[in-house]
Amino acid sequence: MNYPRKYFFYILVLTSSILYAIISGIDATVNTLFITNPFILGFSIFFVGIFISLLFAGILSIPINGKSIGHRYFDPSFKRLRWIQKKEIKYHVLAGIGNATYTIGYFTLFTILDDPSVVLPFTQIVILYLIIIESFNEKNAPTLIEIQAGIMVTIGALIGSLNLTGSINVMSLLIVFAILIPAWALLTIYQQKLKHLQILDNQNDAVNIRFWNVIISFALLTFIMFFYDIITANTFLIDGIIQSFTYLGWISLIAGGMFFVYILYIRALGIGKASVTQAIRSTIIIFTIPVSLVLSNFSIIPLFSTDPISLMIKISGIILIVIGIISYALTQVKAYIFVTIEPKVDIKKIMCDFWKIRGITHVSATTGTYDMIIKIQTRTLLKGYERIIKKVENIKGVQTYRWESVLKEWERI
Amino acid sequence: MIHAYILVIMQPGFSNKAVDEITKQEKVVKTSVIAGEYDIIIRVNVKTLHELHELTMIFHKIKGVKKTITSLIEKELSI
Image 1 (cartoon, each protein chain N blue to C red):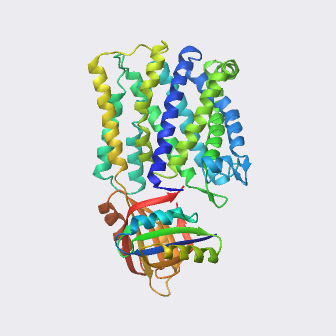
Image 2 (cartoon, rainbow over the protein chains, first blue to last red):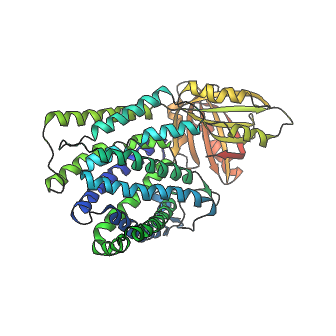
Image 3 (cartoon, each protein chain N blue to C red):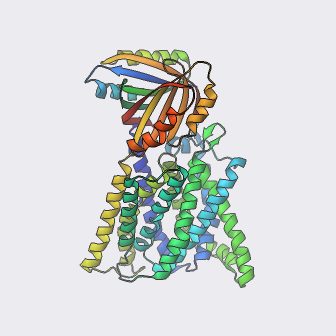
């Protein structure tokens, strides 16, 4: 069936967020009751994660009527589990550094704050970093709506992350801004680059990206912890292995859940911009509240305050995030440009000239009335003119061009 | 695999129902309603030119379709 592409994109991100909120509740339980050391817990999750990811990726590779389960239900680009390709390695290493650092930072934050409804909203501030990085990549200033939405989500996340027990921790803020957010931004950007790579004549798939990310993150973390143990005379590495077996059920639950959280998230990254994906993912702030209430009910985290002012502030934060997300997600302009080329001009060179323009997503050399059909995606019409049309007019060999804006789109995904 | 764009000019008032019919076709991967000289642009993936011809014939039979222009993709750069 064909669906408007954005609905499918929202479903992917929201499912990933809901699942992540549930997993965060399990994280908080394990971190509070069983493994309190963030290094040991992080290591255990990656250690067990390798076997869990191998198991799930193996199951998803099973063919049914010629097509694998993963291809049918998760990512049409996925065929089967495969070896890492040479051109992927540098992106996987950078994403792995991001993932390993984020995991340790995330569990350190849990050690300090306990409550998932406080920890996860904090991590959503990453959207500001992503907007800055995307603007830098596009060699263009962000639009007003991007700035407004980014600020709204950031302030909303800060207000929404107010601890309902009333305390504020400076150390946790430092961890969020100096470690957690840069690490998550690194992971998101390089996972997206990996998803856009062409592997064996196909677009890269979410399942293999996640599988190799776990392997490389584990290798990096083991390397760091090995030297850390030698320098500080600790035994975190050995403890990590022992705890993995002791709490195998709990750790497997987290690792298995995270496998699906990430493949849904990576699949979404292949469709939308990283900052938009992150903006929608900020809805996690809403989903963590019932999780925290359940944990609070079982006395795993401190009891919730019933102070109406605290609750009102938290709700205001959530409203700000939702408004920010909506305004961000609804402002996207797509268009086609139909181009005719002067005779005796090198088409390949003109295709490359078009391809260099930021915002152009497809350049197709075609037969028929037009020589090229070009697809565009931009934030505003003004940006489309400033960033695209002005440059198209300067390409030598372009005879005529016709801009046609997309009003609505359906896609088989 | 042959990839192609089919540009469609419609009679006023028929676009919505035509899109419903177009998106039902299995070979159609993307359908966009656009503003300008054309009303709908369809991206199709077919195995043979014969399949493309059959698909075009189906589109011609849809009520309100005035004209179609088929452009085969010879080479493509995409993200």
